Image (tube, rainbow over all chains, first blue to last red):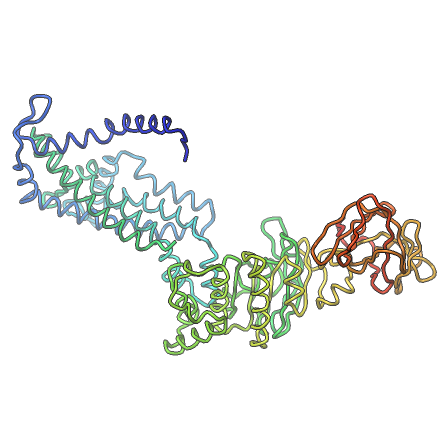
Length: 265
Length: 353
């Protein structure tokens, strides 16, 4: 343990509370409080109601939640596939190629996501690949934005993977594909799970690029939250945000359960 | 033919880690590659497995040139120090891995897995995961996994280094038994431990600084080493600088000693190698007076360090009831037949016992 004395430990806890509560917990608590509020003119909200939630889980809101979930699932799956593939290829290449690959994947994250969205809009607004106005351009944008994180965490995990495993497999007569499928990917599974969770969470909350791209029939939930607060309905927006957080949290919990089962050591 | 290295050179960048390596392992032979760390012994093994590509030379397995073949086409079995058991598979899946990868029918796989586990005494652990086994058990599973594919050559890379001393001697006996039961399998055994090499190997290849220094049976290397390096690395050795005399003896400092000089030219500088256990306390042939500088009790023996004519001699003598104390003057001796004359300067560097 880093801090030994009881007084020291208490001081550390106090400091933690001082930083954590206002920075992380308080905004979220206010959000939850607002989502149940009828009015909020004094220090505390008043007129508790469930109306906002009633609206948040039906009709347009429900469709938006489904769109968000589908987008996040598809983008995570695509990003994980592309990121893992790239990480595996880069691992087989030299150190310099690996660095170039890292930079390329980082690029979309380094520019403002509005710019990334705009770039995609310009690129796919004309034939032969006309994606503008379809849900696919939203999924594509999310994929481009989160692949960097998938690539990064798989690269880190590959670096930690003891080459003795794949060498043992090869010495037993297993071809490279068989080794990948039966040994390397299973051993990477915990890291792949973590990467999937990260990609999913990032995609669920993505707003700026989505704003540039979403078609009328594919409205992800963050856009709806933004719209509600923009229109001057902060309580409806809060309820939608709480639904968004809750759903994301549930998916992440499910993923982490799978991950625990997949880690053997 | 088992394994043959033909002028194999391996380099990483500008560092040569294996230099013009020539060695033949006969079918069914256990060859130990013995050397200090960085001597190139593991690189030689990895060249057989196909994990390093030689810059020059060829590697043959069973009469087949495998220099350009990927590891999975070489028909080898390999056991490494870290075991490298697949942590996500049960023991039986681990052992059957090579067979499934090579498309052996399911029924035959099950049968051969059972045989391999029985051979290593691990039959009752088939349904366990590797993490549920002790180090020694994991090593047995690793050996079973390597043997299940019925390789012509078995490569063992410091297989016992991760085990404690008692387990190690048990596993040495097991490996010797496996060798008797599989007389056709050639084994290449990399180790830095002379006891493992002496116990298990039919022949030992002594390596140092990327080169092969000596090859021979354990008895040859121990009793009649050809170089100072071999003498000091295979067992302990007293190495005395001597001058070859005219009358079939040697001169060490102020003393004339009897020793077989062979065809060494009189007047030549040479090194006399005497094993510590061949040195006796008290008067005898080739007596050397000296001062005790240290004494270690080792249970069954005492090791005396005796300074004589500016050189330190080690003597391993049976446990003494009344051992001398440091500073005492003693006489040590050795039989002429227990000494081996080596050409001077064959160690490459200054190693004394």
